[in-house]
Every structure is written in C-alpha cells, then in structure tokens.
Amino acid sequence: MTFLEHLEELRWTLVRSAAAIIIGMVAAFVAKDVVFDGIVLAPKSADFITYKLLCKLGRMAGADDLLCVSDIPFVLQNISMSGQFFTHLMVSFVAGFIIAFPYVLWEFWRFIAPGLHPRERRSLRGVVGFATILFLLGVSFGYFLLAPMSIQFFGSYQVSGSVQNAVALDSYISMVTSVTLWTGVAFELPIVVLFLTRAGLLTPAFMRNYRKHAFVLVLVIAAIITPPDVVSQLVVAVPLMLLYEASIILSARTLKRMERIAARELPPAHRA
Image (cartoon, rainbow, N blue to C red; front, side, top):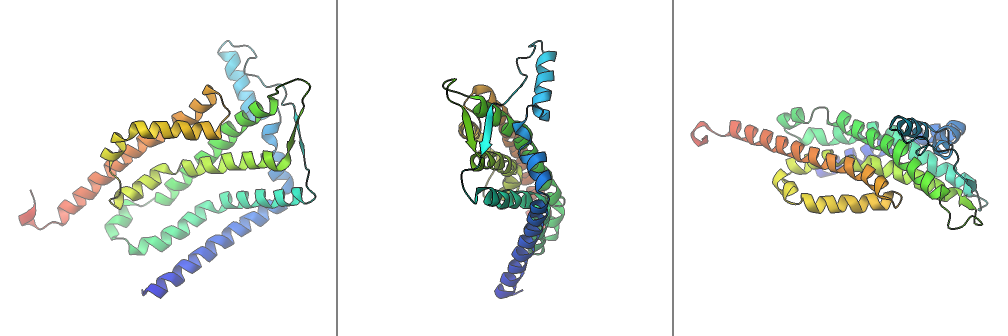
C-alpha cells in the first residue's frame, strides 16, 4: 500500500470507530433511566452493593457497624438551565465509549496487524481480548470501589453541622465518570508495556531500576483520584503496583521471546 492508501485506511478506521461510539452513545442516551438511576446515581444511595459488602465485611471482622453506611447526606442540584441536558450528553458519550471500546480496539488492531511479521501477529494473538478485559476490570474497579469511597467521603464531610452539602450535578457526574474512565485507562499499563518492549523502547531492567520512582508516581496518582485518607490511597496504589510488577514480568517474557525468534532467524554460522 502507498502512503496515501495507508492514510485512507486509517481514515476509515477512525470513521468506523467513531460510528461505533456514536451508536453506543445513542443507545445510552435513549436508556436514560437505566444509565442514570441504575448506574451513575446508584453510588449515591446507601443501598449500593459496595456499601452493603463493606458493612458485611466489617461485621465479619468484628468491627460491628463501623464500615456500614446508613446515609450519604447530600443532595444533587442543577444550577444551569441547560445543565441536565449537557450532563445527559456527556454521560451518554462516556457510556458509548465504554460500550464501543472492544470494537475500537479491534479496528485499530486490524489496521496495525497487516504491517507486522506473521510471527509477531501470532505472538500478539489475543491482545485485543486481553486489553478489553483489563479495561473492563479497571472500569469496574473505579465504579464499584473508588467512586463509592469518594462519594461517601466527600458527600458526608462537613466542616460544621450548620453547613449542608448541596452538590452540583455536573460536579458529581464529573467525579464518577472521570474516576471510572481513567481507572480503566490506567489498567491498560501491561498492554502499553508490551508494545513498548516490542518496539525496543522499554526493557524489564529499566522498569526494575525505576521501581521506586514508579511507586512514588503511583502514590501521587492515588492521592489525586481518591479521598485524602491513607486507606483509600492504598486501595488504589496496591492494584496499580501489582500491575506494574506484572508488566515487568510481561516485558521480560516478551523480550525473551523476541530473542529466541531472532536467534532462530540467524544463519547457522552465526549461532552461538
């Protein structure tokens, strides 16, 4: 294919990906009651599954009702004439992106795969499914754990009993969607490491040498996206560090596989 033919193929890849996101967005827009009452606004209720499980866990650990959430004392309010409509659009777009994510990955893989060596394509078989699973795990982690913890902390925090919490709708929605979506993106770290290793831009030795720096960076990220308490930050930091360690193992295995392939392709006279 010529350069212009590659650009044309990329254009259609982007068009099909955008179309998939728009279709998912329209479906989410139509299913407003399910998306908002059943999903987005659900962590605001004390009956949310995460709060129930934490309550049971606390009782099993002998902490009585210490981890139970009986009420989240804040109300949502819309202070802009078009606020609810544009919030509806924004949430629908995020939902559409999450729904279409596996297809978008497959489209980009289909664009990249023809330029790879057959051995490379075989070694990367299943990468779309693996990336999709990681993304959905991250989204679930953000939605079922990080978002409820943030909502419960900030929604019930008061500097004085005379000051009531009335939270703007767009502020609440922004926190839930950003925490959920960016956690899903953060869980794609092993996939990024895999491609950087294959491109020769990253090695497991480099990642091991800068493990301490990565740990500090993870703590900073955890402090940004969670409530300002140690427990919440550790809940985020531990999975991210486990992903980092798993990425080191993945990078090492990928590098060894590349070295074996390169050794097999050498002429017999040059082999050790």
